[in-house]
Structures are given as structure tokens and as C-alpha cells.
Image (cartoon, rainbow, N blue to C red; front, side):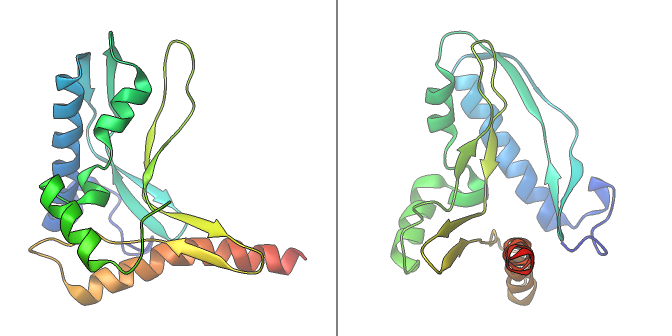
Amino acid sequence: MPLELAPNAALDWGKKEREEQAIVTRMIMSEMQEAGVRELRANDVIVKQAGPVAHLHTRITGRLLETNVLDLAKALHPTPAVGGSPTNAAIDLIRRLEPRSRVLYAGYWGPMHAEDADLFVNIRCMELFDNQALLHVGARITHDSDPDRECDEVERKARTWLDLIDAQRAAG
């Protein structure tokens, strides 16, 4: 949602967006619990702003006792935010319908230390070539999706990257 339209309170967002966030949170919590994460906690959903796009954001924390953090990240990827749900059926459909591989479209990133890690789901990125850039952006399609709104959302997400490119060009 654009900043001027995105409500400041998560509860004021639309049913579709709140349900998308809940699906992702439930999956992550379930996978983390299955991996043996203890003291698992999901904070209340908040609104985070990133350039011209606002996001619903849930911070999930826990104590990882036996599993390596990278193994946990692999178990969590892809979340329903980028891979759909149910995962296997959605990934199969994506592979059949999308014209290119999702090489860099989604993943996880963040600082890792000996005792802890702060990992984030990456849902947008850009590949740079000699004189070209390939943007990877998308929208989550659900039963309640409005195709025009989803298209607008993808354009707003791409605008974040395009604004960075324009700023670099202007700087010389």
C-alpha cells in the first residue's frame, strides 16, 4: 500500500492483507516449533514503512537449541509470502506459470552471530548487469485479491528500486 493510503494501525488494514500476514506467521511459528525452537513468541503485528510501500510486520523470536540457524532458514524458505500455500502445490503452479526462474526473487538475509541471528524474509531484489537491471517483485494472490490492486502493488514495489536507480543516475 502506498504510504499515503496505508493505515498506521495493523487492525485498520484490509481483511486480505491481515489474513496474508496471519498465514505467513502461522507457517513460520509451526516450522520453528517443529525444528525445536523454544520460548517461541510472535509480537503483535505492526506497520513498517519502506519507501513508497508499507508492510504488515510480525517479529517472531525464539531460542534455537539444537538446529543450526541456516538449517532453520532453509526449512522456513519459501514462506507463503513468496511461495504460496499449500507450499508444494503452489510452487508447482508457480514453476508452470512464471516465464522465468525465481533465481534471486526471494530468500532470507540478515546478521548472524555465534549466539544469535536476525533473519528477514526477502521479497524483492534486483539483479544488475552491465547496463541493465532486472527487478524481482510480486504480489500475493488470494481468493480476495483484486487484480487491479495487485498490479498497482507490484508497480509500487518496483518504484522503490526504480527511485534508487534514478537517484544514482542523477548523482552521476
